[in-house]
Amino acid sequence: MTTITESYVRPAPRTARIDWSPYLVGAGIGLLSWIAFAVFGDPLGVTTAYSRVASLFAVPVIGPEAVAQNSYWKSMPLKWDYGVWFLVGIPAGAFIAAVMSGTWRLELVPEVWKERFGPSIAKRFVGAFLGGIVIMYGARLAGGCTSGHGISGGLQLAVSSWLFLAVMFGTGLGISALLFRKP
Image (cartoon, rainbow, N blue to C red; front, side, top):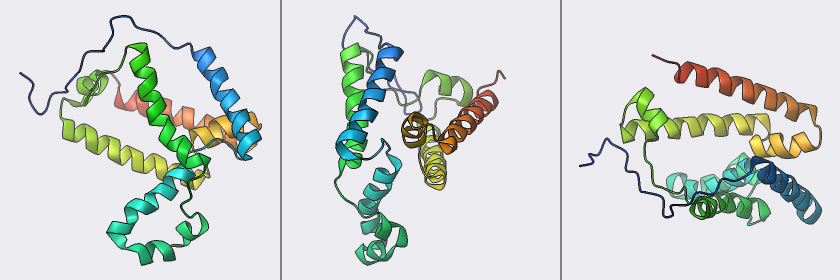
């Protein structure tokens, strides 16, 4: 019997698993980046769109007047451009890809987390939420995220983007080594 502190794992809907080629997926992302530049005149990126969508969630908390007077949302008002639709498409596309590959399952606490930090769903969700706050703040502070700097900026050979990538990978390796070291 599953308790509230254990993860619920739903079996994959298919028995045949399809692995996505990282080379084809990388080429697809590169092609998508070119299309975004050609059709929309903007690079790939989601943190700006995410920040714009956040204004919708801020209205019930701080009120429409406060959102309208906020200097950030004044400079980046909500508009349903390709960036917002790209943001919506990321989880939708990931879900479709997981279902198509036969690897989709509902997993509230991944095994690697459970082994290191225990089976608490609340602890996992708090960790994910706080991590999301830190990465979103850092992405806005850096003027872009992994897709904005890492893909679009990297393709444009922007020095700031290559520096961002180096710091991101170095930090990721260091934090991973710290958090997931053998006890």
